[in-house]
Image (cartoon, rainbow, N blue to C red; front, side, top):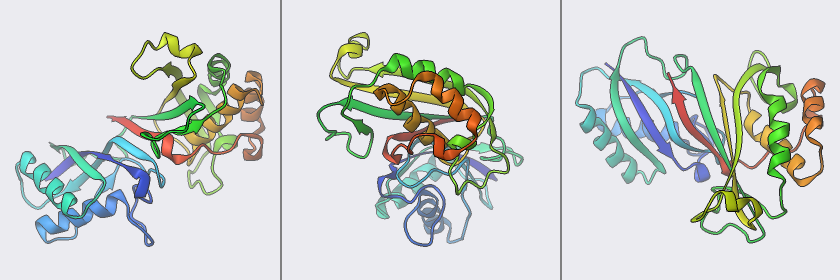
Length: 259
C-alpha cells in the first residue's frame, strides 16, 4: 500500500529534507520513525528537496508499506516516534493513494513563501524564521521588478552553481509581494516602521536557490541599489554574478504542493 504524508518541519537545525552523512534531515528522522514502527528500512520519497535552514508547512512525501493500515494510527505512531527522537518534524496527515502516485513526479505546482521582517528592531520571537532587514524597502519598486521574472525564462542568473537541474529554463507562474502589519491593518503597514514583506512564488519546479536568489535581488531593488528595470537586464544576462546575494534560508517556507 502506498501512503501520502503531509509534513511540517522546522528547518533551523536540519540540513534540509534529504538524508545527509554529516547531520540530521527531515527524511532521516521520518525513516528512523518508520523503522521504529515496522522494524523495516523504508524509504520516504519527498516532493522536493529543501536546503538547510528552510522550513516546510506542507511538504509531501510517500511511503510503501507491506500491509494496509489505518491512516490515523500511522500518523499517531509516526508522531510518537518523532517526539521520542526529538525531531522538529510533524506528520499532519496520512492518506492512501494509488500505486502510480509519486510525491515528486506527480506534483504539478510548488508554492514557496519568503518572509522578510523590515524594521529597525531585530527579530526576537521570529529569530530563524524571517530575514531581518533594518533599512526601509520600497515595496512598490520591488513589485515592478518582480513582474520581469514572471513567465518562461532562462533563470541562469538566479541559479546556484551547485544546481543539478538539466536545464535552467523554468516557468514562474506567480511572484506576489505583499506587506502585512502584525496585529494591525495591512494597509497601515506601508508607512509602518515594523512590517513584514511576504513573497509568494509558484511554479511547477524551481532551480537550486532560485527563490532565495530572486528575493536577494529584489531586496536590492527595494533598498535602491538597483532600478526595477535592472532585473530584466540581469535575467537576460544569464550570469549568476550579475544578480544579488542569496537571501538567508531562515525566511523560506515550502508552503504547499499541488497534484
